[in-house]
Image (cartoon, rainbow, N blue to C red; front, side, top):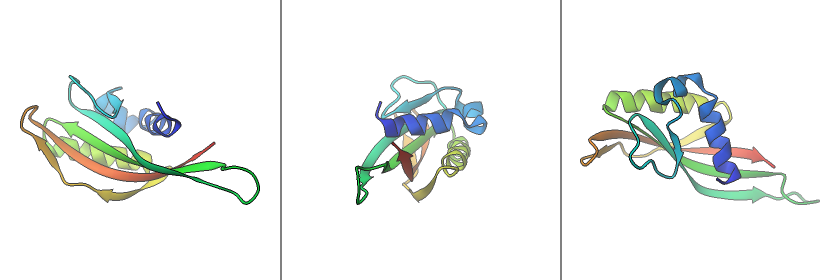
Length: 119
């Protein structure tokens, strides 16, 4: 797992409001066969911020976080808990279209976040 993804996992696992809803069902990139509700996070982009003297001391990156549950209300509640946890260290830069997967019958709430990770 990339350092940026480690940071997202650490933030979400440290948030009681998130773990109360998903336990440890927080996955990078995908969650095949997982019981709902769960969270999937993926690094979308990143850039190192260079200093005039020396190398980069931190990385700025964007992650997409998808929250899946059996109902739209439950996926929204999970997304709100995730947003509160991540916004303690970063900020939400946008919400993506709501999702409903016909095959799994799950509802999804997806948002993008910007974070900074010290090296």
